[in-house]
Image (tube, rainbow, N blue to C red):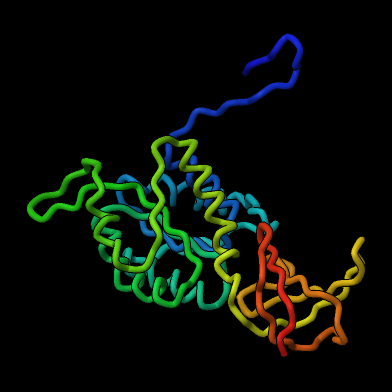
Length: 239
């Protein structure tokens, strides 16, 4: 804690490893976590599972739905199905576990589903098991369509996981989708329509903001998303 002579504000510091740092941000921005433990990524899944069991709430005000599968392939398949249903989904893995997720990663990457996978890098070996750290696991996935961001400290791991949470929403900018109108809100600039797309859960995920038009609550409109802010999307009606 540092206290300046002319600035009495305090900064609190917490000592943690990269797994715990990534788990904090992952939990905040996640609705569903599909897990299967493997060294050295296990602490991320264990923390998320622990917090969910204790009822800790994410940014949407609900505990994360944690699903433990029987293999890494099952965890990746769960991520794929959950993302297609519209939930913000994540998983955690390393090394050979990541290798088992590659088939599902091609499907998720090819469908541009906004998923975030947290990897604790570990060597992939062919003749014996090793827990040494290198980049052979995630570099094997470079053709799956996933963008790869790497951190060099626990602070960077937490910051990158946070920014990726918002990036999942920004990925929809430029797309068109059907939006159901939930209500009308008065703002300083006038009235605007509030709705949600098929990939947004009502009262849980962010919303879609539209310019006021001749539409009523319950109408389904075709909308093009033009911008995003945190978990909110901004769009205009095209049909």
